[in-house]
Image (cartoon, rainbow, N blue to C red; front, top):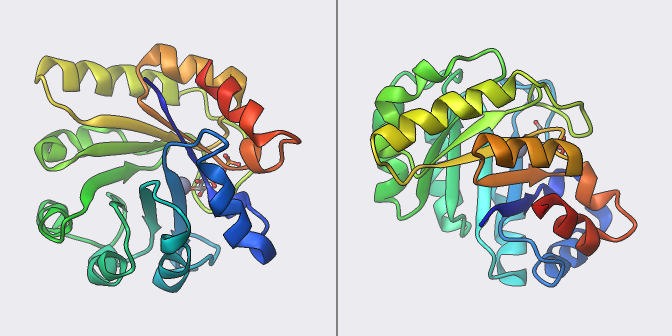
Length: 215
Ligand code: DX5
Ligand code: ZN
């Protein structure tokens, strides 16, 4: 069953609590939490303080996507802020991705790596046993509301084949430009989790949109 993870990057920041509280009833599976440091990506969003603030408002897993240069510095702050899942970019300044993934799991969270659109899947193949999930970016990270990059579909298929061949439980998450049309293509290609920011939060009826994304 496909999971839908609305990205609160596209929520109304002045009404964040209400937006998070509504997600479960609207049919969301995870809360996607986009952390940007103004360095790894050309934008700044929010950090552990926001995670701590929304933690009491939902029992859905909080899926933290770290778009930061030094992800290892943020493992403990997000653990104590109540995050459930932490994903780190293979393109970040972290030299020891394998160790960082082990540290995330040792802190009691699910761990994963993220690949930018230009990054081939071979960069995560030797990390899969340490990954509960791999997040494939289907837009260049930094902003919501961009168009889905179609080459992502062949990356999903190739990664799915690798995971299946090794009989691993690793989930494939897709992030960026997901709408009902691109969601269908991602699901057909083998995606397990779909992040959707503007599609959900700009929809007149977010519940109907989440249902439409499931197909
Ligand atoms: C982009 C973020 C995404 C973003 C997706 O850097 O990682 O999670 O919020 O937004 P949409 O769904 O609008 O492309
Ligand atoms: Zn994201």
